[in-house]
Image (cartoon, rainbow, N blue to C red; front, side, top):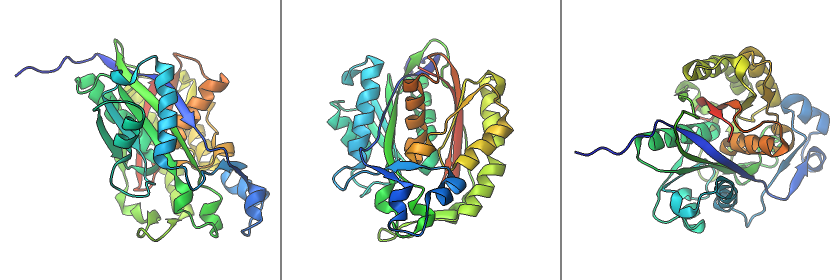
Length: 318
């Protein structure tokens, strides 16, 4: 039996992102629910978020972000043979988003599947793509995190309406002579699964904010440190720390415990809100676009959310 040629490593070749045009500020929300700008910023750090219109789907946003990443990579659609979409907010479960997005992008006959690890989904998908490319199961993979959380939110519930938003981010992963994506550290705390849930298809997203906050600020910094350890990287070497954009207080708590003193900390949540699986690639792509990180820099990405799931790895900035 002949085995496929194994790549020494893989790396992120390019990034891309997309946000809907509609900006919703805290003052906008205060017109319809009992809240205000100071209350929202003091609790979650958000000033504004993007909300997609009724006619814009998860697949629409994913295809745009994916197209930008593909263009930036210099590859053609024919070079991609694996598409993974991380999402937890599809309107329907069938068909999957990955096959639809691949077709829209002109990617012919790729392996195509979705990953639902909620806000940790992008890191799960990136770890899977890394393994597929290194094992020879794929030449080049397109990994997309895309969410339309606005269609699952009760807009009269200030505990969730002020937090969640829509958007997409993407990465192209290809072979490399040296590893550009470190080993993934992933896991779950299923005993707390009820802390973030949607009861059924007619219900809205429910979150026990305090439960999630306590878990995230106590359980996740060891995961971040382990991801650095497995990659052979000291946190002091990191140029960027890009955690899931869940809550500014959570982000800053984990960053302090990580000890990455020289790293730029992603705070995309301030203007983008919590976009679940889209938040890490969206934040990372915007950081690169603004010149806050440079090609070749090392970044730690750390996803965490419903399930409760978590995953993280060190990557080289494309």
